[in-house]
Length: 381
Image (tube, rainbow, N blue to C red; front, top):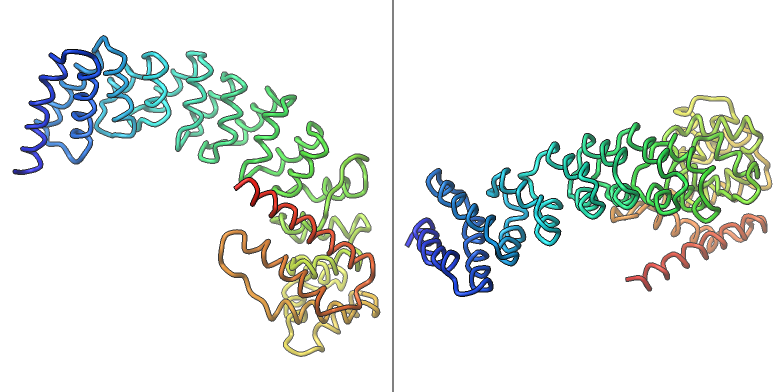
């Protein structure tokens, strides 16, 4: 028997139960079986017409259980017609939520209508979708409830443009739940991160610094204690910045491009930062600095090190750090940059015992902090 014939037989048998079932449970079971049959594969024009007629019957059934069976079984299906998806989205919550949250049949205009209905939980269902367009997000952040905006911010598949970020921050910038959601996004525009600093707690600033790039001047100001209760690790910010040249120039301009911070960058594996820092201090192009730093011999590093005015007492530490770096490689897995940095610190501590005490303490503190983070993650898992 062909797939089409099997589908037809199933439909004929179960349509009778759907229409004439003794109770709503029997009709709901029939509805589920029919919907699964509809969703199994491509439909011919005739099959599609028959399927739509059957789905119309289900959508109009007085029993919630039957309508819910339709909504849940076909919530992800392209075979659910748009007009029926809209009808189900207007139904009671238990029927509407699966369709609002998942149905590909609903258009952006349909979703905007849901948002403008004002029902918080339905707005949340929109915000949770696998993909939420910038058009829908714009209306959601402008007119949605706080819980829906928070949900959208935590959904990295929701497309926030600059205007949407600004609107959300303008409406709910005093809400810790909303600002926490900003910080937890995978990507956050620099100007938004900058605005958040004045709105969030010390602990939240720590997470913001760790997860997102800050404007160089703001990073320096925080590090210098412009906000007394805030702390920042400029090495972590060096790893975040997309404009390393500007970041390094800002450090130099503010008198923060010290031998100590450059050594810390080397020991934690932030080699791009070290290259640009030495280039800035030696007043040479980055490309030339790169060639000298990574010279297979010893002359290149020695030459740029001296030209940059770095202290001779630290040269052995720099030489060892670069030797260790050239022996290592990224493992290619998730979060391999952080693992590389950890391995780099561990090898520096193991192989070079001449680090100044303050740099030794710094590396040990960094490793302790990462161990603590790993333990928390393991406990949560």
